[in-house]
Length: 310
Image 1 (cartoon, helix red, strand yellow):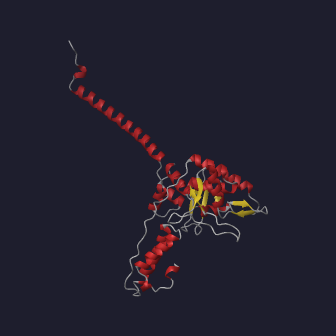
Image 2 (image 1 turned 45 degrees about the vertical axis):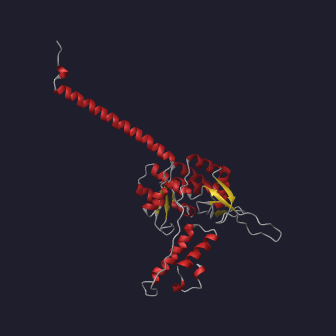
Image 3 (image 1 turned 60 degrees about the vertical axis):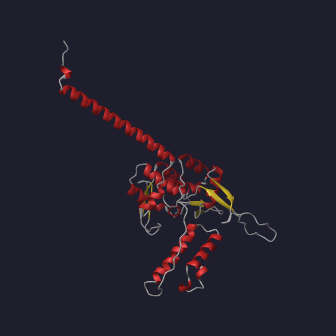
C-alpha cells in the first residue's frame, strides 16, 4: 500500500484511511479488493500492538461488499458453450461443470493423474489451492472428452490441457480468458460494455501510438469460467452426492463457503414444489387410510357390522 509508505504507524489515523479508500475507489477498485487491503492494514496494527510498539490501533472502516456471485450454468448453456469453445478448452470446461474443480487445478493436470480405468482424477498435495490431495470422479460425458483428448496428444505431452502452438507443438494451456469471452459472446451468455469509473464516466484506453485516438475501454459482463465451479458444486448435490463427499471433490475447506457455491435456482424451487406435492399426496393417502381403518374398527366394536335388520 504505497499510500502509507511515507508515514509512521502512529501517524496513520482513520482520516488517512478514508482518503486511501477514496483513492482506491477512484482507481476503479471494487469494495472487496479495497477491503482486503484494509484487512491487511488492520492485521499489521494488531501484530504491532501486543509487542508494545503501538498503544492504540486506529478505527479502520470496512466497506460494504457486493453479494456473493450467483451465476450458474443450465444444461442448455453448457451444450451451447461446448459447441463454441475450441478443442483445447473443452476438457477444463467439462471438468469444472461436472465436478467443480478449480480452473487452475484443471489446467495443471498431467495424464499420470487421470485414471480412465477407475474413472478418477487425482489432485496432488501441494498442487491444489489448499495443498490437500483430493480425488474427483470422471462421469461418462467427461470420460468421452478425455479419451478424445488423449488420442490427439503428441508423444511426450504430459499435460491434459494442451493446445497446438504456431510451430505445431503441444503447449500447456495457461489462460482461458480470451477464448472464453469469444465463445460467451457468440452464445449470448456474455457481452462487452463500455467501462465507467465510480462517477459513471467512460474510461478511455491509452492511445497506442502518437497518431491513434483514445478508445473507450470495454468490460466483459456475463457468465464467467468461475461460474462453472458453482455449477459443479450444485450438480454434485443435485445428483445426490452427500455433502462431505461433494466438499472433498470441490476442495472447499469451510462449510460456509461451500454453501455459497451450492446455489438454489428457480427450477430448484419448482422441483421442491413438485416433491412437496408428492409428499402431501402420500400423507393424505396415509391419513385417509388410517381414518377408514379406525372407522371400521369402531363400527365393528359396537357390533354394527353384524347387525341384522328384521
